[in-house]
Amino acid sequence: MTTPVTGKLYGVGLGPGDPELLTLAAVRAIAEADVIAYHSARHGRSIARSIAAGHLREDHIEERLMYPLTVETTDHPGGYRGALDDFYEEAAARLAAHLDAGRTVAVLAEGDPLFYGSYQHMHKRLADRYDTTVIPGVTSVSAAAARLGEPLCEAEEVLTIIPGTLPEDELAARLAGTDSAVVMKLGRTFPTVRRALERAGRLEDARYVERAFMAGERTERLDEVDPSTVPYFSVAVLPSRIDRENPVRETGEVTVVGTGPAGAPWLTPESRGALVNADVLVGYTTYLDRVPVLRPGQIRHGSDNKVESERAEFALDLARRGHRVAVVSGGDPGVFAMATAVLEVACEPEYADVPVRVLPGVTAANAAAAAAGAPLGHDYATISLSDRLKPWEVIAARLRAAAEADLVLALYNPGSRSRTHQVAAARDLLLEVRSPDTPVVVARDVGGPEQSVRVLTLKTLDPSEVDMRTLLLVGSSQTRAVERGDGRTIAWTPRRYG
Image (cartoon, rainbow, N blue to C red; front, side, top):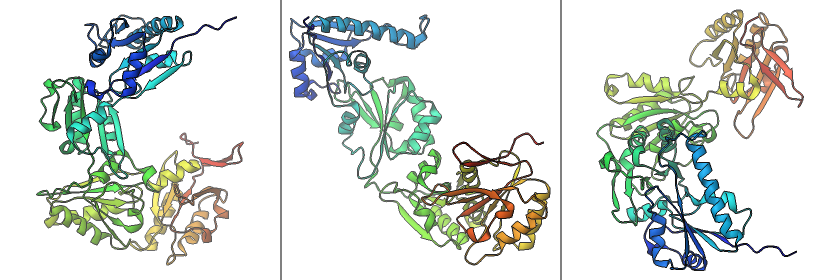
């Protein structure tokens, strides 16, 4: 039995609009095709066809794949998505009939076929059944950068491509946390995108490109664009910031940024955005080293961990002189960290006009609790065992009060080279109130390369195994430690108090 010979499918990228940007491969595929297919709106006109028009022949069979709707309003029982799915199935069936008849089919696509393109829906339905070649095209992203004449990204910068149809909060978070970006699909989404850029602190960097390499193209600063004039075929661009000078403002600002317990993976988008946008990073050297290289041109000032007030004053002085300063803190800056030191100095009269923001971070207690299970599932108290800034008698009184109240305890700063007695003293005090079998989580270097999280009991807690990189979670009378089937012991505190 002879196997039927089927035709070949091409997905042909045409570039952003100028026929001169067609590749040789695209021209060759169009020439080889028996059938030329292209998508169009209900008015029947097709940008893809207009780009390739100079290479179409009279003997080409043309298949116009006309969308049944252009807005998300339909009486289709499956809604907008259901109506589109039915359209794609019908369009794929029409192309399959040509392929089964042995004809070569070229599906035209503006830009690149697999980059936000209509062709991809044909590809997913046909490529597994027919010989298929996808010919890449110049994307609107590359076209916009070329028209702006500015690099998109350089060196270690990260480029993020975002659809403008995302919710404003999501847009702001993604824009704040990247080096360079292109926002697609503007049109009616433009006001939302503009607000998101402003919230992310990136509006002054943003550029607008409309119809790049097409008739009526336009480029300008995005903050100068009239929203009523913005078509769908436009993009917002945040170009590379390498080689850009940090502007000196009349008054800068200080943002205290929580980096979480171990650096980059724990940064929130808001914190990453503040670090990206800062002219100067200030912090304890160990915490500064956790911050990834965000962009060239930033200045870093590291210092010892015992000069918090001096560090805060230095940051505020820089801000008063017009710099945007990020004070880097480990964990959450408001939990035994830099926020208090900065705000204390910021309340002095000479710094009263310097804006100060505090951004939250994942706390060491939360990170340790998550690694161990859920020991902080009910009421808990957070206490530092360091007696450098408060006397041990105060610490002991608070430990006893929290223990007698049957609170889970998160114990920070348990010990160091110069402080060796606190853990043993705290354990002995707690044993006067708590059962010896009370679960204790010993969490060291959570999120770091030497992470160790163990669940043991209060009576077996060995102070010699505890250092400054360790956090202790002491359970209440309700906390449970259970060995799971994988051999791991987890700790959790019920939300319902027995």
